[in-house]
Amino acid sequence: MTTESPYPMLAVDDALGRVLAEVAALPAQVTSLADAVGLFLTEAICAAEPLPPFRASVKDGYAVVAADGPGEYPIAEAVTAGRPAAARLQPGHVAYITTGAPVPDGADAVVMVEETRPLGERVGRRFVRIDRQVAPGDDIRPIGYDIAEGQEVLAAGNRLDSAEIGLLATVGVIQVPVHPRPRVAILSTGDELVEPNQKPGPGQIRDSNRAMLAAAVVAAGGEPVDLGIAADQPQSLRQQLLAGFAAGDILLTSGGVSMGELDLIKPILEDVGTVHFGRILMKPGKPLTFATVPVATKPRPTLVFGLPGNPVSSLVTFQLFVVPTIRKLAGWADPHLRRIQAVLTQPLRLDPARPEYHRATLRWDSTLNGGNGGYRAESTGSQASSRLLSMRTANALLELPQADETLPAGSVVTALLIGAL
Image (cartoon, rainbow, N blue to C red; front, side, top):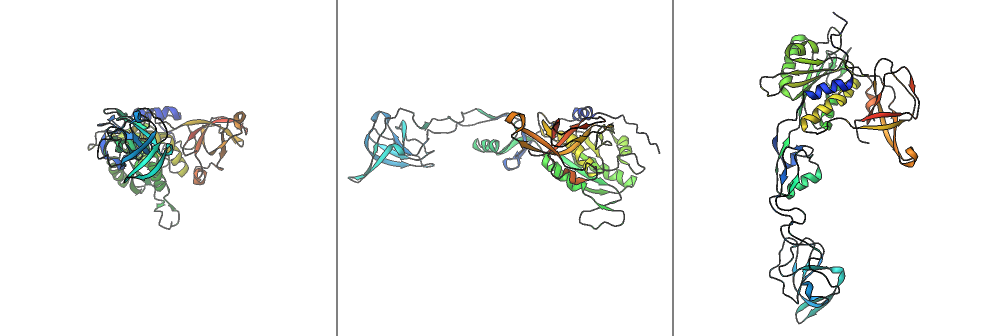
């Protein structure tokens, strides 16, 4: 067994560039309005009719003929939302109207109720006093005021969040052309692994990576596909990988990519596809592997990430490489993680051999930057790659340079966001 890797050590940005060069947005599919939240439009959406489709009252009050001016007038009828006027409003009359109701033909203004006084009944009719002179058009939304007929309300590439879903419903679009959610198959490897609901035997541990990665896939906008646990047996592992290549747009494996005798993933990937890299100059996550594998039943190769087996290494490399991949497949214009500056709350020892992605919690501090505010970064503690507790409250990865020195508290560092601020 050789102890030298045939793969050159790539910088993180170079490796991510190689990954994204192999990725294109998924072809458009039509989905229901309810299932479109968080997805990206593949074509522009235009309004088939104007909104409002009638002249609508802006206020509760009275529809009037502006030329009549202030005075005492009989109330011809009440017009409410969803119930248009029964007749044209004649000069010398007013109609009670509610917000959003169609303004009667003949009326050309609305006086809000606060500028009127009820006068009770006279000869069997209710009267009201109008106290203010209004101009034609006052407190009326004309036809098409909010959305004109034929107007583009959403552009191709727009992400569909709550307001966008509301706009689609407004213009009557309930079947939506979108990039679908990427399907991400997940396979754990290792004879030492048992299911989370099982009690580990001697030398065994529960498989945390599969559940962790499935949750991370959902958070990133993908759809996880659980492939279970594969034993460290070359033939059975090969069969499970072949099934996994067909199961998703992306296949994630965890474990089996280092230099040990039972690290079997890379040889199989080399045999059936193209391995684009097999080592990254980073801590944690050095043995990360990326390959593309053609599948006869699919129009595109499957994107395969061989993630390290240690939970933290697995999740850190997922955030740095798989999240941008999911985003690009889903139609994001810029799939990269957001970078911001943060101030260290404590000194951090740098690694002389590799750049480190240090787990940290960012918090806003209004006293920084001369009172303009900024983010402070607090380490989550021990950064051992097996210690998943270091990810528990982390919302950022601090990009720490490779150096044989200590960054003092107060140093400004770059942080990659992996969670909500």
